[in-house]
Image 1: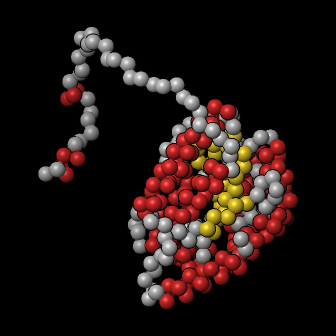
Image 2: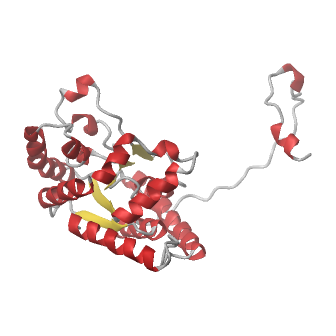
Image 3: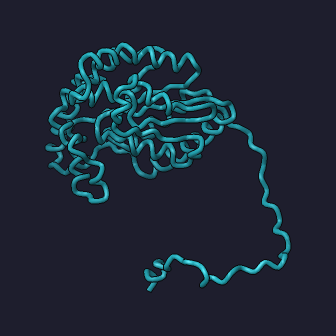
Amino acid sequence: MGGKKDAGAGKKDAGAGKKNGGSGKKQGRLPRQVYEAELYRLQAELVKLQEWVRVEGARLVVLFEGRDAAGKGSTIKRVTEYLNPRVARIAALPVPGERQRTQWYFQRYVEHLPAAGEIVLFDRSWYNRAGVERVMGFCTPEEYTRFLHQCPVFERLLVEDGILLRKYWFSVSDAEQERRFRSRLQDPMRRWKLSPMDMESITRWEDYSRAKDEMLVHTDVLEAPWYEVESEDKRSARINMIAHLLSSIPYYEVQRPPLTLPPRPPSSGYQRLPRNERNRVPDHAATLKR
């Protein structure tokens, strides 16, 4: 899980790209048909997990961490695609405000923790302090040291209180990260995903690797272990992460009462108001049929 492994993988991938003529074609990618079939099966299991959480009053917290462009966001989308947003929600916190900067560091995350029967997926979490804040100098050395001391204590308290806590680190090589950045730069529909901070992460690759290594030393604890997701192939990463999450929770399929559609009652004389009396959306679709 260390930074040296990531960096080494990046060099290996870069060399492989040259060997293949620089085509950039991924080797050993999970076939789309196999991926989609298994993803749908796992998503059906996630729906069962959701119902178990709701009925049992469980509280599930899943942390998604990793380098920029490692595939965290796309995995979260697949996890939540068929889930009830009233049960499963995403917490993606913005930059803290002036008042929040004076609070206990974990305070603003606590208010997003789930109540009974809820699932919360953190798209980045309190581990911002161990990563971007540490590398970019957004926190003091004292604040960083305090975080490394308090974080395991904080997570043990969550687990002791009955919260199911799962922590996933999405690992990607430097070569693959750069390829994804370039792809986003060339795609106007995804360019918004890039920021100056993302660009700087390329030049600070080893700094982030060292920060990750130190973070794991202090926070990979028995009560709340880290699980690394190899994310060179996004399809495999999504399948592997979801399968592991499901395997780590002793859920069961909740038996729901059968539902039947009642017969429509006979008309009581209701007349719909004339359509021209209301504002209507123009039929743009009709122009496409011409």
